[in-house]
Length: 232
Image (cartoon, rainbow, N blue to C red):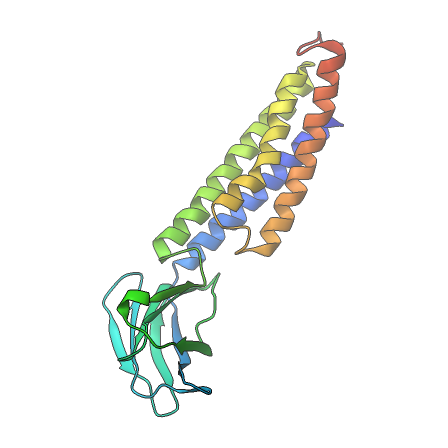
């Protein structure tokens, strides 16, 4: 059963690695977005539209583009490229606010209908609100690529363990292969991919379950017969 579990682990890891590779490629495709929202200024009794506030937008840390809010506090940018989008909102007498968000063909956070509140203050008490863990498109693609490579390594370890344990009774190898599957979701979590692709989180949970079964089965065998026993 452990050998079957290791083979399933390897196959599942290969599928997930391919899926991540496809997503990384699609993220680099051409795309443009509209970024819009409303800026309000905090008053003594209630918030009112912040007319004439300056909104400076940058994509992937590139050339800044500037606009001003209308009488109703609204602003809009068109034909904004994919990647990390940073907007700095300022108005004399109020603390500046920076909003970091992200947009791409495969993953995005809020870019329209943004609501920004300015409070009395100055540059010394500026605030930043980040809606994404990725500051630019390059970082996002690098994380996706790293996830694909890690899953590829898991697939290699799982397949190797399945073959070795099938030819000879070496439970320690099975423990290594199973453990690789168990730690795969942890690695994807630190790459910030689990929150970006919820379906990936479920799939890696299944990967971890299969790996835990293989590792536990082989660990129990080690306790019974030692790290390596002769082939039957």
